[in-house]
Each structure stands twice: as C-alpha cells, then as structure tokens.
Length: 414
Image 1 (cartoon, rainbow, N blue to C red):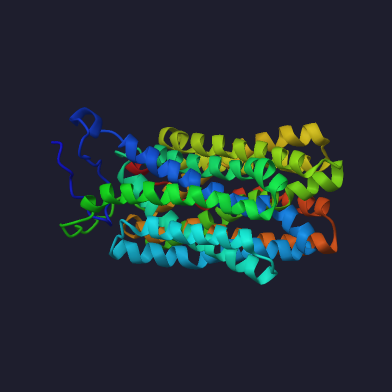
Image 2: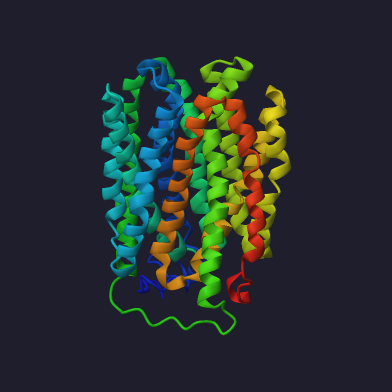
C-alpha cells in the first residue's frame, strides 16, 4: 500500500498513493506535495511581482511614459501567454518532471539581467525571461497539484493559487523595504529565491517522476450527462472572457494603482506600495477561499457571485477617498479573486483529456490578454489620466453576465 501508484499523465482523476504516506492519509490529498508546489508558486510569483513593484524606480530612472511601462508588462505576460499552451500541449503527451526547475532557471537569469539593465530594450528582455519561467512553471505545476489532490480538485487548486497570490502580494513589500532604499541593483539579491525554488522543484520532480511512468492512459469515457462539444467550446470561450475581465482589472491595479495613489492622494512611493500589498493580500485570501467553496456549492455559482459581486465596489472605487479606497480594494480583492480556482477547475473538467493544454491556455492566454490590456490602459492613461482609466475599468466585472452561458456539469464534476 505504501509503494507509489503509477498514474497516467493525461488522466489525473483518481487519488494518488504516495510513498511514505500511510493508507489513511493516502485516501486524501498529498499535503506535503501540495505544500511544496504552493510554496514554489509563492517563490515564483514573488519574483514575478517585483517587476510591477519597481515600475516607479524604472520610470524615474529612465524617464519612461505609461505606454512604455505597459510594454514591460506586455513583454512579461505575453511571453507567458505565447508559450504556456505550447508547454501544456507538449506535457500532455510527454510529461517532464524536471522542467519546473529548468524553467525556474530562466527566472533566475531574468532577475540578474533586470538588476543590471541600463537600457529599455534590456529591461524588456529581462521581463520576457521572467515570463518564460512562468510559462514553463504553471501548466506542469497545476498538473502536479491536481495529481496530489486526492479528488479534492478545487481545494488543491486553491492551495496552489494561495501560494501564487501571496507571492504576488509580497512583491510590493519587498520592493518598498529593499529595492527602493538600495536601488535597482538590489534586485539581484532575489535570485537567491529563484535558486531555492529550483532546489524545491527538483525534489518535487523526483516525487512526480514515478507517477507518470509505465502504463498507457486508458481512453476517457464521456459522462452521459456531459455537455456537447459545441457547448464545451462556447463554455471555454466564456470562461476565457470571465478570466480576462478579472485579470485585466487586477492587472490595472497591480500595474497602475501605485501611480493612481501618488497622483491623486500625494502619498509616497513606499506608502503606495504598502496599499498595493493590502489589495494583493486580499486577493490571496480570496483565491484560497474560492476553490473549497466551489467544491461544496458548485463552481458555476461561485463564478457568478465572484465576478458580478465585485461590480458595486469597483464602480465606487474611483470616487472614494484614500482610506475608503483601501477598504474597497480589500473587498474587491476578496470577491473577484475567489473566481480563479473555480474557472480553471471548471475548464479542466470540461476537457479532462487536455489537462496541460487547458491549464496553459488559462494561465497563459487569459493572463497574457490581461497583459495586452495593461499596455492599452497605459496608452489610455497617457492620453487621458490614471483616474479615467479606473473609471473605465470599473465596468469590467459586468462581463460576469456571460456566466449565464455556462453549462451545468454532471454531479461528479461540479
């Protein structure tokens, strides 16, 4: 009972028995593996969030405009967008247990390059390298989280998302405490985080490798109540649109909220970074709660509530004072981020035989479109104002009305 069970890479639907875990524990999630992959997600997204957090330094040092700031976001997120579905499609056919640690090496070199960059083009290349690390990391790590879920897919996805969300929230804090006082060169210190992540992911790869060897995957039999292929295609398009609306709004805050607070309320850069941390920390909490709620009440209802539920608060944000803005961003972060896990798991259950590709599409394309939107918003801010950008973005959660087109999944895949 304590020997590893070989699980087909494409059919991750059954609980996994992991070496060293007792039979009682093996019936549920492999918590050590989930903790490891979530902590790795924390480290990965901490490093990624440094890019947006040092925008004020780069803007002042190199006299960049908002459109150029948006292009840095685009270079990072579009790299991930372009490659994540490709990585996911490839690993659907041939899983690569050690690709995570290899991909993290790209982030390692991207940080070192960013710390030493003195030209705008070099900054773009550094951001693209960090995006490349993200492209390799997310599809396969999401597969590992599901493999270690013990059937609690929403819970496992939330644990995985929790690490990434808290990592994203730590970027502004670390930038305020380290990068602002010590300058651009101090970014190189964070390469030690990348090295730690490489070590952890190599160890997880050793656990993952026995799970994907041997038997060929059996054909997946469609559930008799499963939606038709046409309904699945429509549902996937709707889910991409919903995740896009959520991600674009979050991207507008993570990329430009610091400038918004500085311009409107005359706060310092460090104070603005702390306000951004508050919003991102609320995102992390909401991301964790969304998965278990989807397991319990159904993912469709969580998607409805989390997207549309944020709309009244996003509409109020552009007209609120400093304290009220902080409170509103906490509420918005809690509500809107709870949808991520439910959207991703819903999509995975619609197309279970293309798990890696679907994970890559939703981690890559939808997030990458958010990066493209951030570049457009930067251009809009240059021609109007940051305040006008937030007045426009306030209506993005209304796209949640598209959830009416989502099909009802069979009871075993809610």
